[in-house]
Length: 496
Image 1: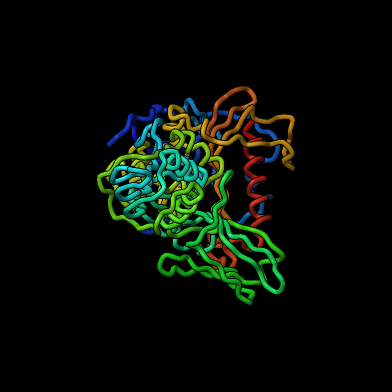
Image 2: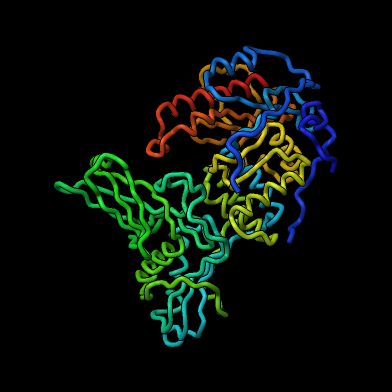
């Protein structure tokens, strides 16, 4: 495959990049800013009829501050049709999940499924297991309470009522990380731990209800069919305004406090879990008890002994997992999938895995302006350019079916958009951080021509200035994101 430079991309040399298919299965902090590349004239090798305001006028009207970068190219030839600061390094946010999807499909293959097993180290005689029972995770990022409930039912169907040994939990299938981005506040549900045994995207449901002068609080692991109470997480209501939450890990218990002024009459919210192995074991014990099987308190195992399978659950095939990840932008799924892909190639560890994906995309495209510190895009230190993202999506996406994993972009009801002339179809992956908004994907014009694009908006200085107490919902973020998303739709419509 011919290597590409950013100069080549902007000069239309993308046309020389062969569409590379997904191969069969194969066995540090970044700076907040990067040196600005020298300005180079853009060679537009494909003509587009101008309609409506220019892109410069649209960017100015959006009043986003910071930088806006985009590139639109013809999918087949690679000819550059429109661009603005395409070499500017920008935070990818969740558009990084597009690269993670390509990375995982190549390393693991489309038939890959994440396994979860219940193992026994001895025989079952008279309803008693003469040995240990082990809940063994396989890194499944989509494992739910309902799945554990089904595994418990299988054990009940085998007539198992008691175990003579230990109840072990094994989470060593993937490297453990305490949180995806250590720089984020503890209480954000989209920044949980990741391990080889995950449950409910490693989130636990905190519930509260006013009772007299105080509150009744609790945690549960609800899914569609089961909602067992959780004992490994505890919440204490404290008379204060701020901080809203505090967190402390004490032994096997995740201890939280919450400000009473933030609760109101009642409600619920998902909180992150830092010890997903203990969480899954706790929930499985409760579900097993409901099936007539009493288990002792879970013990965390460092390794797996020789054992046989009593019950098993496999995730959906990898493309289904990735499609849901792209649709709902689940960070934990991206990290589990990315680390599993790296592990299949002998790379262990979260940071090492992100670096491996960075090297991989540079090798596959010949471009090296991407820098990933994780697989989800949650870390604000990751950087990509619109040029390189377009090159990656064009070179690797079509044969991998990446467009089929993306969500359709809707224009109906969008203000400031001429509904009479729109693209036939746009599919993409969005990305959102505080004062960062991104959209990458594929566009079919009104006349049926296929395009590939990347749009990035970011006010990094404003993002970095947000204090921790306001990270969940900083002042001005909502209006800023609305303007950024409107700009994206306006650009897409202008490319119809």
